[in-house]
Image (cartoon, rainbow, N blue to C red; front, side, top):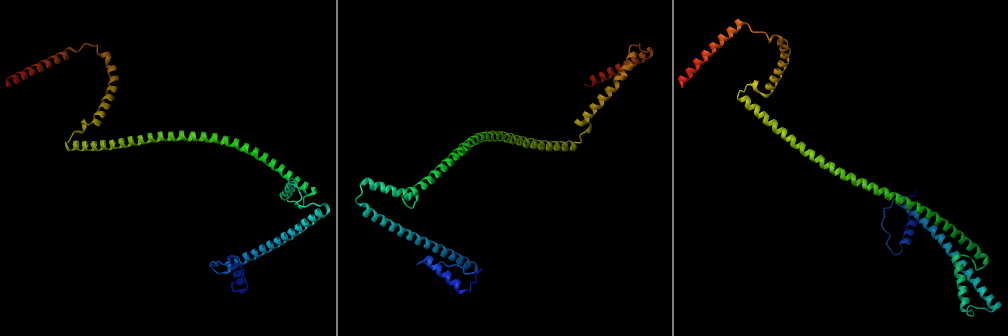
Amino acid sequence: MLDVSNVAFTFMVNSWLSSVFGDQTVPQFEVNIRTVDILYQLAQCSEARCSDTALFIEDIKQKTSEYQADGAHLQDVLLQGVGLSCASLSKPATDYLSALVDNAMVLGVRDTSLGSFMPAVNNLTNELLEGEKSSRKLDRELRALRRRLGATLVLRGNLQEDINKTVKSQAVESAKAEERLLNMDFVTAKAKELSIRRERAEAQLVSRNMDKSITHQAVVQLSEEVNTLKQEIIPLKKKLEPYMDLSPSPSLAQVKIEEAKRELVALDSQLEINVDFK
């Protein structure tokens, strides 16, 4: 880390910022250890890259001057040795020469000799073969991806169909559940209403001093008791069946006849009284 109080570092950072922004105003920033350290590192990197760029430019300028010298020398050789110049060449020759130069520039060779062209062509051929190989590989991968995509689309269609069926089924079940809830609410309300009516009826019966022996529960219990007694009488009747065919006792029969006569007389008397009263 750098010390903010170091005037040399601060001056270097300010100088670098001024050179970067030129005529523009340097933006305000918080001056602390971290910002000065970052700006100092950026300034060093920038100066290093500017130095490399300057060296590269100098190298290009030197190669350009060398190429220009070689070109001038070759022109002198052609002109003095063969008597050829660019102006004396025919149109086809000029076109061929331009094409040769363009090819040399495209291939990136130093000169137009066959020894320079052949390696460059071989490299391009190898790159072309590698490109074709990569293209075939990409085609295979593309076909595989298309097959997978087709299978995925089919699966997606099936899943979408299943989802639609599920949604419809859920809608139907939801409607049924809602109907059940409405029925349940109706039944609950009805049961509550009937319970209130029953309580009111029981209160009315209590207020009227109704005999509990004639209530539905009492009648049901009495009916059950009667059925029980009937079941108990059945074996007794079976025991009395042998005695049913015996002749009644004469004395008892006479007594019964006398009782019947007295009842008949009493009924006649009561009938006459009622007739007279009316």
